[in-house]
Image (cartoon, rainbow, N blue to C red; front, side):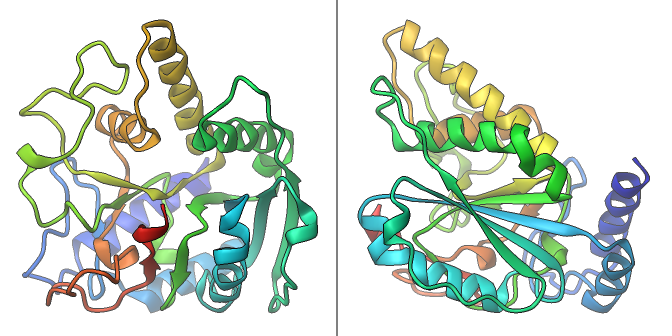
Amino acid sequence: SNLQLHWYSLNRFSCLFNRKRPDVKTTTDWFAPIIWEGTYNRQVLEKYYKRLNITIGLAVFATGKFVDQYLEQFLQSANKHFMIGYNVIFYILMDDFSKLPPIELGPLRTFKLCTVLKQHVWKDFNYIYMKNLDMYIIEHIQHEVDFLFSMTVNQIFKNDFGVETLGKSVAQLHAWWYFRHAENFPYERRPKSAAFIPFGEGDFYYQSAVFGGTPHEVLAFIKEYQKGVTSDNRNGLKSIYEHYLNKYLFINKPTKLLSPEYNWDPNFRTPPQIKHVKIAWHSKSI
């Protein structure tokens, strides 16, 4: 579509020709921009996206102890920092609506509650979430938003998370592994697993707490993830969700990458490359 063509060319242009960060890598080998503070022109992007009247979705999965621990902070901070000035729909996937905290949202923001359906054979909570998200994207989300982010609830927005992050397929670089050598990346190394990435291959290690793109692209990943889990189950194997995501993004290169500024672990000392932490990720709670 024209929208996709426009934002793809615009994002490439604004990122490739506005490099002010010689201290970090700002473009991948496949020419996808890596978004750091200072690599994009917010005014140009705002002017562009405001004309398009877009709607952005943010899906979050909140069950069990995570609801009490994080949901209120997640939603309050997202209301304050996520896509300010744009139409936003928060999709809250829960199994117990009685635990929903009071939610006060700013202008242009709404939320929708989505019941989490479970089957006894589904043990992994990521699988349950993705199975449900898949259903809701097909049912209504794809008709309601232009872009969709899926995030884990154990995060707090600290600074503006804006339209510079939008793209067809958006991946988050993992704070723990960004400054490490690729040989150390904790990819799935068992050759029989659907998530297998051999030593010597792989581009980056991606964080599963943030993933986004068009609803169509998010759906495409979920389908592959489900296929991978099913295949591994047949072979008596079990890998983790993040491994399947990394395999998918190794084969299907993302069109935009978010630097560790967008998802930093506050337990780590902040290196000079991290100028503005956009989201604090609370790893201890996993």
